[in-house]
Image 1 (tube, rainbow, N blue to C red):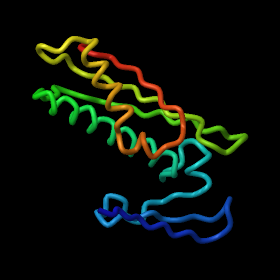
Image 2 (image 1 turned 180 degrees about the vertical axis):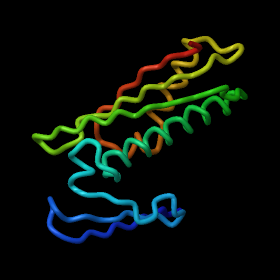
Image 3 (image 1 turned 30 degrees about the vertical axis):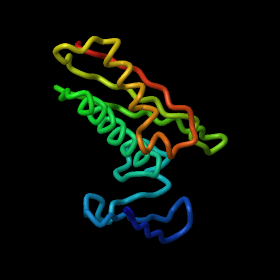
Image 4 (image 1 turned 135 degrees about the horizontal axis):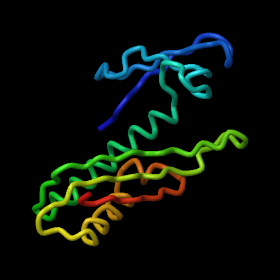
Length: 141
């Protein structure tokens, strides 16, 4: 299986702009630029935001998969991925996954946290990233 995306760029780094598109058209000539990457309040996306979105989605699905393997369906899962970008070194320092989950009958908080840790380690995007990945879990609240 292969997944693709296309990026187009025109102009210099600070004043130029580009578009990102995917075959699904969820991203369809979506604006990205130096300003959308490094300034607040500018409409458009950036590579780091897309990495965070991919990680949040992958990890949440991985939690669901781990639950499914145990014959359990998730009631409600929500993950925020917080990517830490070092502006001086221009590198991603790490990603923190903040998972909130509704309680599941017959599953303790400790059991759920163990499942979430397994998902953090086993998520395809987690495996692709070479940065520290931390996790916090709020369960049943």
